[in-house]
Image 1 (cartoon, rainbow, N blue to C red):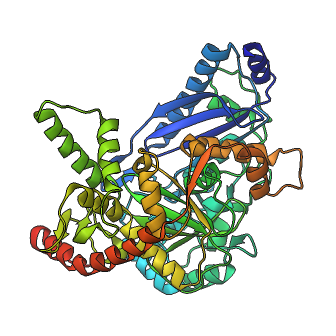
Image 2 (image 1 turned 30 degrees about the vertical axis):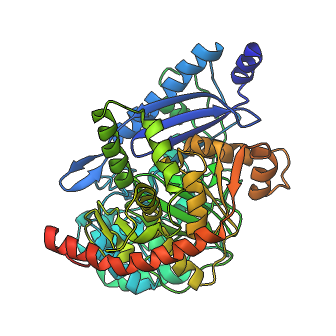
Length: 536
């Protein structure tokens, strides 16, 4: 079998996926059954320069090369293979941000990543102008911010793109973008499969007095849906990715995509009325819609799946940080009394106690706000636990309240969606909250009144997701849609567990959320009193 894998890789039959995430760049090569045969990783960090969170373009290039060289090294050590080609390849990266170039391909401004909030005022004004929610981190918000500030480089822009689009351009020479990543640059129309012409017209009219020698549409990369060919690796691109000279040019590339889109692929969450929920330091929930939401909700972000369907995203700045702090505190106590526990055992013991708590957590309301939460109107956060005088303050109720509180902001966003008639058949969940099997999954199903699935492959990540999109582009059965391809090929034998909501949990969470909304006044008072700030 080892020799078979070696021959497979050396024949160039694998599919390569590379994702540039916020803390690491990862490269993987997968086989026909979507198993990872080899991988490589390079760690990197953004840095704050003159108030802007950024990475240098040198960091992008050297990091890309380091991750790819690590993959080659690991493939050689594991299988003995020297890889020179692939059947197909793809690039994924952090969505949004700002990368403007002149006609010679020179970067005109420091790369502004999704993390920056300097475009906050521009995003608000653009949201009002377009009657479409434009978050701070969107590329068009950064462009408008530069226009409003009168930055001189704007006149010279001839092309702008995302990080994935930029790397794809370096490797293929093509100024294209996947529709999922495009939907974080400027609003996309699901019917036309490209940027919304009506909104482009409104924006161009709003900045017409500036006299720029371009129309916004001329600056943006061409939009492609999953399955389309997005160019081939050029000799220059091959030399950039593999300076050693072993990599052959001519490898076909799928459209570059954002990390949200590849996350949808990795969790098989692209069918209408499905979605995925990530619960880590921050939390987000993405739901695939049956049609665009035309009414404006500043709490809801609308992007698109890699095959073009609209997706509603609810984002929470805070999720598991505070519950992890409480678990750590209990760990200190266990050590103090001479009965230390491993981290996994701590989580298991405490999370399982939560299942013994009252369905509504008995009158305890934790606010896990280490940072502000836009959905509830807070610029800053301050962790607070509120309880009624007659609350049943015991460990099961306390831990249940902590778990229920981690997803309260996401539930508030979901209520807005349901008010728009959005229906959800199931969610796939992943992240640190689910490290103890069956606990957070059950409580989340009750909190959202939706079946929740946890998949083993959900942890494979975006590099795996973009490799799958590369494989989809060169699939033998052209009749299969992306959703069918995922269901029938990629996830046909996937190991997963699904939990339906328990009526007692659903009713209990509704009572918990009613009290939580009332207790928000205490959170606001703490923020105003201790930090000296109020609402946005």
